[in-house]
Amino acid sequence: MLTGPKRFQHLTIWTTLLTLISSTNGYTELQVEGNEGNKATDYLDFSITTNRLQLKFEQLDDNADLEFSVEAGVFERESQSSQIATLTYKWNTHSGRNNILSLYDTSEFEQCDETKTEMLKSIPSKVTVDLNTDYLVEIKGGEQGTFSSASTVPCPAVWTSFTSNRAKVTKMKLKLTDSDSGYKLEDYYTINYRIIAACDPGQYVSDNGCTDCETDHYSAGVWLESCTKCPEDKGVEAGKGTQESDCTWSPCAAGKYLDQENGCTDCEADKYSAAGVIECTDCPSEKGVASGEGQQESDCIWKACVGGQYLSQDNGCTDCEAGDFSTGGTADSCTKCEADFYSEAGATNCTYCPSDKEVASGEGKEEDDCSWSPCAAGKYLDQENGCTDCEADKYSAAGVTECTDCPSEKGVASGEGQQESDCAWKACAGGKFLDQENGCISCEAGEFSAGGSADSCTKCEADFYSEAGATKCTACPFGKVVASGEGKQESDCTAIRVNGGWSTYRSWSTCSADCGGGSQTRTRICNNPSPANDGAECEGDSSDSQSCNDNPCSDGEETDSGTRRLFRTNFLVLLAFSFIFCFFIE
Image (cartoon, rainbow, N blue to C red; front, side, top):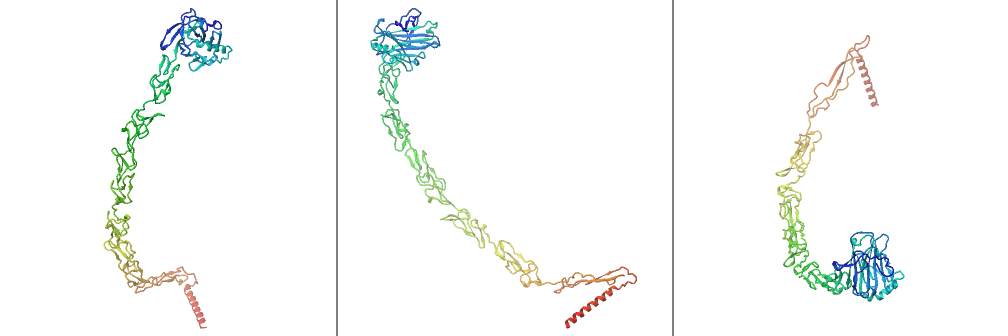
């Protein structure tokens, strides 16, 4: 903490003797040794224009009750009386306490505090002090502490006095102060410092001091803590890059060329380049390579052929011959057309021969090479229309150019005749039958046929007759007959001899007596049929009789009732005839 005559005397209790112990990476550790006073480091050379102070804090363990400070006093010479100002960092990890960054000016005997609390929220890992700038300090992470715009009243006077005197600074002392809280700072933190000089261009401030930028990086030097990488594909030797313009285009890899605006650029398609060239070379004619892939001429390969060509490794794309085809690409040969297909030279596909025409595989070079296919049996070759069905009643074997007529009166359906045996006898006309040896033959008299494929004629039925070649039979005149198949003309029909046949009996006559036994008769006639054409008479009697009224008669009863009835009947008949006779006379 500050040891000025006013505000900080009550804050600082020097408990250790500070010693300088060298450590790695150019830093020196600030140590606390005992509790013997308030000695600081020796005077350190320090120029505000060429030097900066860096503090590095390394936490060893957690603790919520630490209170310590680091003071950096600046002097005009190695004399306490020449002190110009003191910059103090005070950290307090107690809950509710604030960390403070203060600037004390000895000529004004005044102090002002940093008010940017976000910068002082926690103990930093690194702090950089630059007394030659307006911001004064920078805590790692970009947070800066300034005092020129502080809100406290003394700050403008303190800041004005300090800035007017800071050019006199040549020396610096550092002091680490631990609190007497019972916790030892060395158990929880290690604090190191270093005074760094401005680096030369091409260097950056590393943990080891000024270090050359690595290859392909550049830096303006001074206080930069890192170098900037050259733009893509540009480079510079290590430590030689002071600004971006020092980065030059790197030699291009094979397959690229140097574009002064854009650097290494892939060669265009169908071009190649070796490493380090500034332009690409065209591949040989009809050869190519993908963009950026061509590193030497041998990388150029034949381009894919168009349809109708094949790829010859010696000559490139070559047209297919007639009878072949190709869809292009990288095929090393064309494909022969299949059988019944043809193609001209350079064809991408084959064309089918016209219907019923054919050609051997690879032999079809134009449509005329397609010849008619041999016709199947039952057809003949028509040079205009190809294989055509033989007409009806003609036949052909396979492969012939014309059809043969079936034998006389034989025939076959169109296209069905494949050999002579397929010719069948044609259907006969009416009045004929089909003889498989001789064909259609007329029916004899007494027979008939409706024609067709019947193999015989049909005899006329009985009482019918027909002449030769008849399609039907004719019935004999009424009353005449003829045996089946014997009627060859009408005169063969003869009259029928009719034998007589009895009719049914008539009713019985009246019984001859009313009692005591009588008789009665019935008759029949030979007319069913009547004998004719020398036919025989009816055999047997024409009448029949039987007894009747056999019951005995009573006394006085007449037995001859039948006689009396007969008399009355005969009388009435005679009376009727007399009446009729008289009518006609009048």
